[in-house]
Amino acid sequence: MARVSRVNRRPAAGFRRSRGMPVGGVLKIAVPPGVGDVYWALTKLRAFRDKYRARQVVLHVQRTSLTRALDWATMVDFVDATAEFSFRPDRDCLDSGFSTAFRGVDCVMWPNGPIDRGLPLVDWLPALGQPDLDFTIRTEAPTIEVGPVVYVSSEGVNAAWCPNLGPDYWRRLIDELGDASGQKPVLIGKHWDRTFADSVKGSVVDLIGQTTLPQVAGILDRARVVVGVISGMTILGNHFRTPTVAIHPIVPMNPRAWVHHEAPYATVPAPMAPEPGALAKIAMSIARDTITNAEEVPA
Image (tube, rainbow, N blue to C red):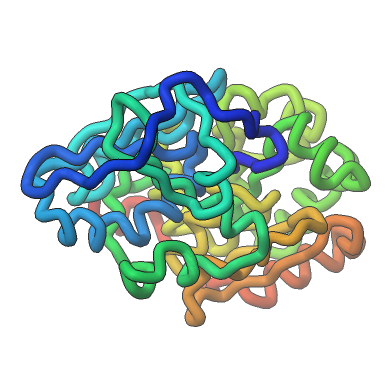
């Protein structure tokens, strides 16, 4: 997820005074780069599109070295296209989560600002009403049987958010989940997660760097339980009401700010994480009892 602390707060070149939004045309909306960041924006985007009677919506995803969210246009019916876009939100945008002051787009939707300060998602752009936590996400059915799913994230995220949980911790957790479930856990992530994942090893179905966003969404939708560093992966697990355990840093952000009340969900502050065996028990206590066979799942 994009973090406020890593954003340059100086106004970037190209900012100008706010102006009105277009009505009945193509809305060009800039958003943060992360899968979960864009998910937060999507929870109010349909209402925003309806408000301005937009014919099309193009998401301009902030360009970074690790762009992750360009596949969203293929996954929801209220986004028509995505493109990369170089911009840096200014302080006002970070504070309010919204701006119409940047050239090249009609507005910036930046829910990270309010969420990173600990506000619930409903408090971001409240005029648009309650966040939609039930919108349809198109996925690709997995070709494997999916049991527990584990997301360890990258070396950088682990060092910053959960430095007390090294490779040995994750390796033991994977082994405990495998023993408790009777299935090999599925390890997911992008190619930039590979270095840390390789240090974890363990007995897993290794899909690091081998899935598109629709494919990994299909895996998360059908998992017995998802265990991982809080991220777009755990946020998608929340959306699908898949039992999810999210390990998170001690920050003002409320790890339940975007979660439907019916979603089976356990949050674990990283500094207080229990031993791997105890965490595996927590995960399996909320896990789905049945195993979904990939061949029985319609595409």
